[in-house]
Amino acid sequence: MRCTRVALYDIKTGSFDEVISQAKAGMVPLFKGSNGFVSYGVAQVDKNAFVSISTWETRAQADAAAAKAADWVKTNSRDHFALRNNYVGDLAIDTGHREPAPITH
Image (cartoon, rainbow, N blue to C red):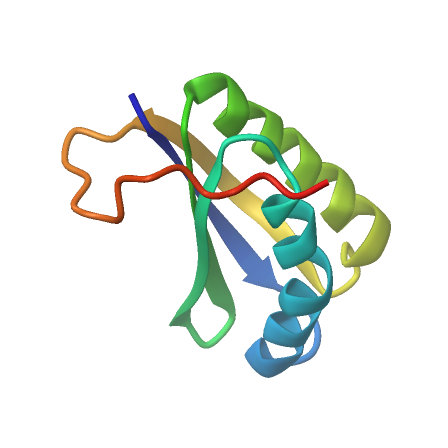
């Protein structure tokens, strides 16, 4: 069963546009190169908050993604934004594309 990871972040400094630039340069390649990757998105939910939403083939892969994301944020962006909450759960309804994302290494 596919799993999703939803993470809520607080923007400490800078703008949401800067967050997007960092995500495109860092998180997108990191997640796309990870086993089980299906999709990734970022949405602004408040002036100073955003969510990161990713979908994975298995719970173990979603949990691994959470750890990778935490390491990446700690190394690259902890002065700009900080994790408030992280959730991983099985998808009960998934209407997205059903074929696994190709694994690139």
